[in-house]
Image (cartoon, rainbow, N blue to C red):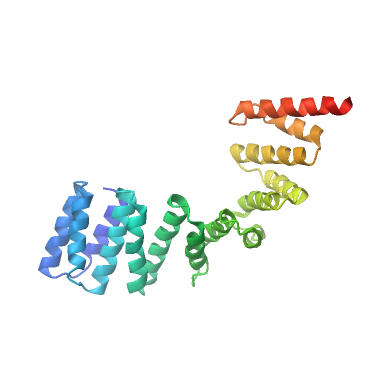
Length: 259
């Protein structure tokens, strides 16, 4: 059974229901086990229409959110159910779970970064600190960056880069390079990417950083450095043709300069 379904089954099973509501929940669960998600949704909605106790309403709204987003890929439709949980619950467990789901949907699926900014800011500022604090803080910074809030994104990535045991300390250097590249601060971006490489990221990340460094040298007209770095990743960069074209272009420019 899918972990999401198992999770909600356990929670629902722990509630005290009237016999009628209990029967309807069992019917809904049976539909889920048969992967008849639309029918399960009808059953859960019919329970909500009966104005059940708050603890039941919270769990069913969360389950409806998961049914729409996880199983039917109707992310827009799922939002109102997670938001309803935030509206009617004061339990930190459900507040965190719902903010997580909203943040993930806005960030990953809907690309609405102005919304995910708010979700991840709330999660990263939660008291007491949550187990996934590092992830929330990074997603907050990344949402700012993707929403083109470059100044605030730089502040957040800098905070992360200065925390020695932060899970995303190294990755923040890569994005600080991107922020400064977008601000056309070429030398600063080079410095961040070079420091990123010193931290020995995985092969794919290192190759991408070297490509960006070479591209920046090209912008700065340091064609020799650009050529050497492009050449060093010729066999590793996913699109060999891109690197070959870069090398040909720089070679022609260097020959033209000599003339």
